[in-house]
Amino acid sequence: MQNKTTLLFLLLILADYLHAADPKFYVMLSPETKANSGCLNLLDSEFFNGLRKKFPCASSESQYSTMVLLDWEKQKQILGVEDKDQLLNIAEAMKYDYLVSLSVTVLENTTTISAFIMKNGPNNVISRTVESVPIDDAIDAAKRVAKKLIDDLYQYNSQLCREKTWTGTIKIEQHTYEKLLNADDPARPGGSLKSDLSVQCEVNNNVAQCTVNYSEQLTGAEGNSTTVASGSDQTDVSISVFEGKTSISVGMVKTYGTCSGSLEGGGGFSSEITMPLGGWSVDAAIGTSTRSDSSSGSVNQGDLTITWSLNKK
Image (cartoon, rainbow, N blue to C red):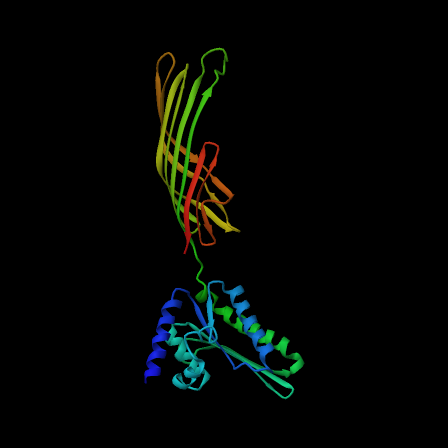
């Protein structure tokens, strides 16, 4: 009784440690012998690599990786002797989602490779395959068995690896000041143009909801004008992170406002306007913090600054 209590306690500790990863696979291998060692290790490796390639969100542990905490012989004595029962009991205690059994037996000149995957729960076998081949063909058979498991598992791809989406903020600031020459006579006084743009976007997947504020002042010998526009608009956004570099593209936004001013010699004007602004892009920026699932940073493009803080969940 004491041994059982200690074992279950260790299982719960390990379960809490592994709980962050999802989905989780528990892999049980048949006992390793001199005769089956090479084929068994290849089978395990082929399945592991296939799982990582097709389902990068998945994590896996084998009975051997948990032996630091759990003695395999005690598992057999306490949790049962049938492979499925062992697998289900261990997986339930350790909060695994998918259960895998990989077995290689060698008898005289024949190698038998068998494997199955179960979703945690009763009678929920996803894949089962068995091959008996001459010893010389065991390597190729192990590769076929591992591939069959991964191919059968792929039908559950949408359940296994939920597509992650980008969320966060992108901020665009642009402040310009430009002196203007007199178009009729460069010797005469010219004017100046000053503008300020602020765009704050909340990102959800490939859509950005943006709040826009824009102002512009044009002054010169022939008169002056002021443009003020603000509003909210939705636009497309694309985000990619590759080898630690972030690329962002934000589409055009519309904002509405007024343009008013006065002319040399008297008189004034005022009108309502619709202003299209954008798009903006960042190309392969390193940023200040970039991983495959998060990126933040700021880049300057002349008088334009683009700042972002994004996470993929």
